[in-house]
Length: 341
Image 1 (cartoon, helix red, strand yellow):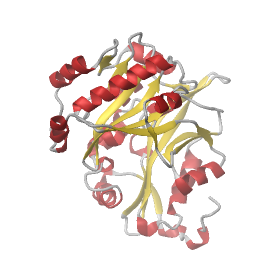
Image 2 (cartoon, rainbow, N blue to C red):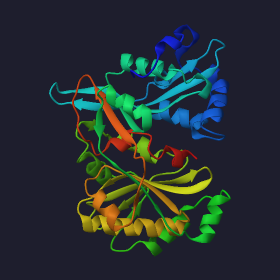
Image 3 (tube, rainbow, N blue to C red):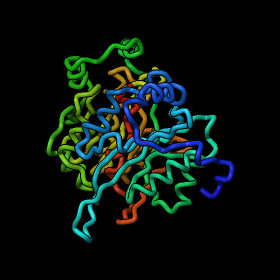
């Protein structure tokens, strides 16, 4: 933060406020200008899901906006609420994941610092996923703990008819999806699209002090808004991928946003089946984020390309020390673009 010249920023010209419904029209104009037309950030369904359906939600008190003197929204910051565990004190602690920190182009003179300062005042523990460039440098200079992860992508030829249907807005129905899954999946790989206790158990196996409950997981992955999460299991159910399907700038995109891999053979079989299924569904591009230590070697064997520059993810806490946590993508906004678009 030392690079920001706060002398040129008149604090009195801006107000940090909790979001209120009276600001919705101004917020939508801000979203269209900064995130794009029809961006998910401006959808009321997304806001209701994020702030009122989350079992840990606190309503719009977790949705911060920056207002100018005319009460126009010129900045925003969203939070995902969850809990972490302090085993030393035997207590659960409130935590937040930060995403969609955005400031209007004409006001990028240090206003973002006001949001971050407010964040540091209000939150004792928080996660910041997937940031790059100067913003990442700023978080590192604040002493936040970086989490390791792999970021990459895979391009391949999709089923042309299904690809065209997605381009024109057709939605995949369940019967078609089941048919393609039976046709494409082999070596015992299974597709599920619902919560199971097996999934909760394997996620929590390496979640460290992040608390992933049944209620949270059902909300995060399988709420009935828009699209459910695809769950691809290995034959022995010791490895799993979580996948969202959607579009970015109207282009069909799939995203693997969580994986836990028992061994390299499992991982290779899962990846081959995943790409075969996604290609048949009509998706030519798969974005991948993985915290699994096996994934780097798998990426080489499957010719998955690295994203460059790779985003950084950070954790900050005054109360608890955490190193790498495999389940952090589940308390982040990974997959939101695909799920809500």
